[in-house]
Length: 299
Image (cartoon, rainbow, N blue to C red; front, side):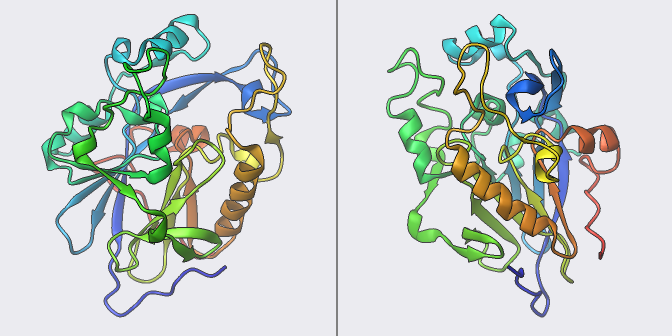
């Protein structure tokens, strides 16, 4: 389960958090036990990775778009229903601008998965190459508008800007069966993260030359009580007793166990996309761009 030790002159990335909007979900959809009638307002965090020797800029996830009315109609209906209230006081573009960057400065955008609160407005990133897992293709075949009731737009992101990770790209890394060494230098690993939605990926990034790591967990888990064993993933909702926030619960739970194993290793830290406690502790602080998330200390 150990992570690769640093090589001589090991490369790494500085990682900065970015605001990407806010979404609210009923706690009873997320975990059990839950507080009745509690709507949890959660951040939709995005992250900027800056390599220690390369000049390119790497973005993980894009949060919510500013113009919520321009999502596919089925998503607009969901937002208007009050099931998932959302707002974007600051989107990823505005967050980048705080550190002097614009969409044209971003070389790579890895999207954890195609749910609406992670895709932002990809049309603004005309010079970026998008990275998706190959399994994501099934969600947009066909997508909106070819399928008018699809929650996924067929051209988000644009096909000619998108690289799909081939299944042959995956090799084991630490506790994870399937990872991809993006730069081929041990600094950034894309992690196959099954269970939540087809094509879901996380990122494992080396944050120093001497052995610290950060795991960006996307929607693998939505509440820290699930990771620390105080709660379980919720199953059931008023409209569907079988509802689960994860598409395949057994696979999601298996991946959560892998994250727990990673989190127990020395000099590692985990941040969730919807990480309420981390956001509360760090909002408006130096972990947000143009600042950098501090590296994990030894334990």
